[in-house]
Length: 131
Image 1 (cartoon, rainbow, N blue to C red):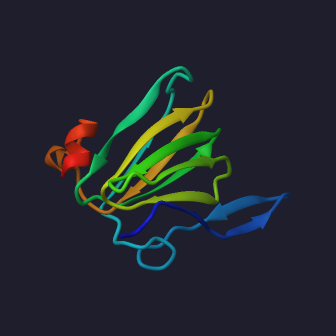
Image 2: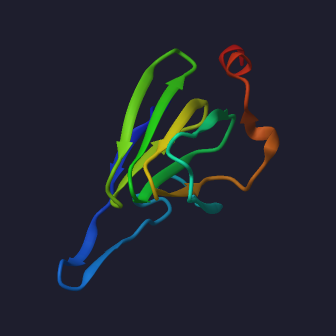
């Protein structure tokens, strides 16, 4: 089973002109991208996430600010990941629970392998662990 892991994408440019980072399906992103979304203006004292997915894979970036992920897979393996640079993405395979904390003004960008489907979500941790 795949594990959550940091993926670092290349940047092109210079400090004088700015930078660009490119994500490409099946090249530096390990799946075909079916959906892109972003979250922003999340208060620092709010924990988001609190779910896992049956089939969805994601690569998530903090394009601004810092975002911290606590993950746990079905075998009980726990990890902590800090996204603090726009070239650093977190690959989250299917069947991984996550809780997310945002710094002030953080912006999360997600590349997802599937279209939105509420039936793909586990929103109850015990149901996830017993799946």
